[in-house]
Length: 374
Ligand code: SF4
Ligand code: SF4
Image (cartoon, rainbow, N blue to C red):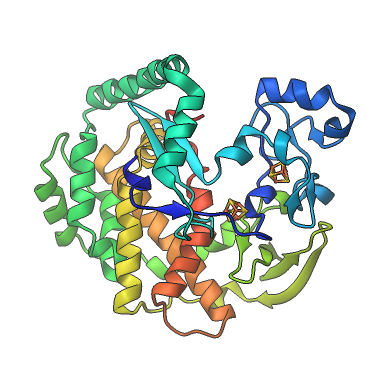
């Protein structure tokens, strides 16, 4: 529960960001919802994401908020599904059970409940038997991954890749450094089980060939290039407005979504005009703090392991992991720059990085991974 320590939370009336994320229904919840005429009207047979199996709650207009949201308040509060009850916490089961906090939630840091207490309650709802069962099947995936990586001579221990990323925290939050990390991730030839200090040295000696601005632009454009509005990332602004961005032709069209699911255009941006803005010292410190959170998340290691696996164990796991962290930072930096440019701000301080995190974190917690969120 390291990520939860010392943090408090209280929900913000009128936010409802988590009501835009289409809660899945667990099998016993589906039975309750489908057996009640008032509740069954809000059930969709499939989730908007093809990766999620089973029933979910319906979204107004197919991309707005939950069918049951009424005046930005839950109309079925006593029956709300497990997904809604546990937000902003996620339980990830990999080689151990770890709790993560969804940092897109603006209620974090407000006086209120201690997250550790909420986490304990959530874990006790599962109970030891279910957690043990989940753990044993997730453990198998991690064991298989390790054995495959070792066989292909690309293994690096989880503790060593984390240690390397910690040593490279300055490089991972700076344009030239990110370019070195990306070049190393794609062309480096680290040996299996290299010591962290050797990998960090290799990265620092790598020519900075990768064009970070171009990567950021390509990834940013791809992020918003989706046909279905419901699949686009959602950003809830400090004023609790809901915003989505979609690539249409050569422009990014920014829309706000209202409570009836209407998506109203409020501006168009040329993606090429979004530059990675310079960070102030406090902005960079905030980014490094967030990087440390990412580096401690088991689900991110699981995501890098998933990538290593689908790429056929071509690259050393340490390279894949550093590439994953570098891509995450570039994505967040680009999103923070987009929001700052819309607000007429020319550099990224602590506040602007925080907005980037609010926009980004729920998406990184949604990436495919070995192990699973339960
Ligand atoms: S995202 Fe957080 S603050 Fe917003 S409604 Fe959900 S729990 Fe409340
Ligand atoms: S059931 Fe209630 S809390 Fe859950 S998404 Fe719908 S409106 Fe929000």
